[in-house]
Figure 1 (cartoon, rainbow, N blue to C red):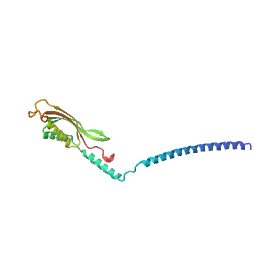
Figure 2: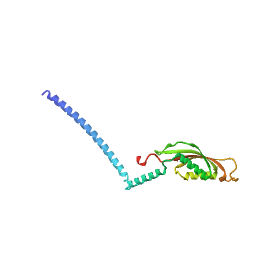
Figure 3: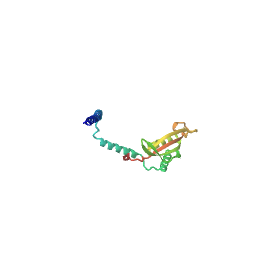
Figure 4: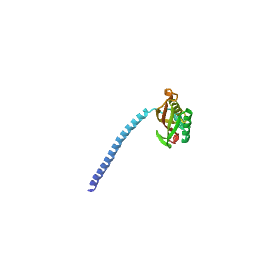
Length: 193
């Protein structure tokens, strides 16, 4: 009997401790549950504000992919740098200017908007009248390849008489240096992105 009373007290203290631990844990979980319920209701409200996707989303995606593929195909593939230089020299001859490739650089890769484009750069010294050089530049910009870009152009008047004796702007001899870049088709396919 003497042992029974202290054992009962210890048992009651243990039960009170267990009840306290379980009760505080339950209260903590109730608070967390209330916080999560508030987050869920906030997320539900935000979700309700998002408009439904358009019904023709897959068609629009297919059209966008086709358009992108068509734009990428505008860039020529398998360009030959010797052929490019020869075509530019033939164009110069056809327009009556004298063109000398001063510097050609090997093909390099330029990254534009996370897409890598092979680029061939060359510098050309062009001599002729202003009208001839302007015609040559116009044909370069509007001809093939369509991805030819004149990055820099320096034109200086050549001292001396004009070609036909008059001083009109079209017959003034000029010396022009063109820095040209020709972009080729990117190495990454559309579907790989």
